[in-house]
Amino acid sequence: MEKPLIFLLVVGALIAAGIILSFYGAQLTTQDIIVTEESIAPGSAVEVSVELDPKASETGVFAVLIEKFEEDSISVSVYDPFGSEIISKIAEKESTEERFEITSDGTYKLEIENSGLEESQIVAGLGYMPDAATLSIGVTGFYLLIVGLIGIVGIGVYSIRNRKKHTLS
Image 1: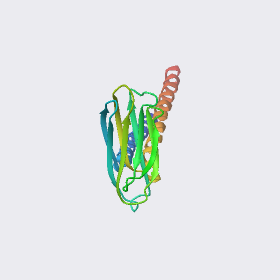
Image 2 (image 1 turned 120 degrees about the vertical axis):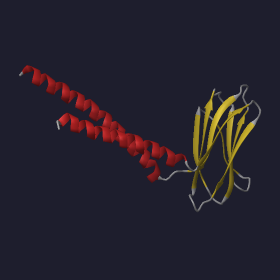
Image 3 (image 1 turned 60 degrees about the vertical axis):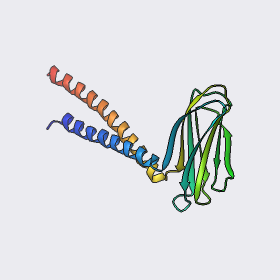
Image 4 (image 1 turned 30 degrees about the horizontal axis):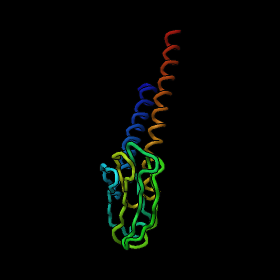
């Protein structure tokens, strides 16, 4: 086999592995997070609840994505199983994410309230913070994709240079 064909097979394998690892990493990252997509009318709220246990993980995470973002209109609060407020903040941009400590097992609640003048579409997630090993799978897949794409450019340059040498001789 010719060198470019071997390189192309290797680069194709790297890209395929990168895609697979990226999708698998995304699946692992989000499997323990409850996600809700809803519209919030002005003056109303949406609640997301999930059972969390510090034995499974000591760190929880919430994320809120807001479509049609209005300044100082969406407030986000997280409550522990006893009803105590752990986090309370006003969303300062379209995407708000924060970690919190899981101190006891029970139902943790994420409450998103719209005090603005317009209806907002939100995507909210609440659950366990993925560990470093889980996050590294997706990052590894991303780097494999980058290496594969750089490899394709390298094969293209090599083939063009090699073709010019054959046509000159």
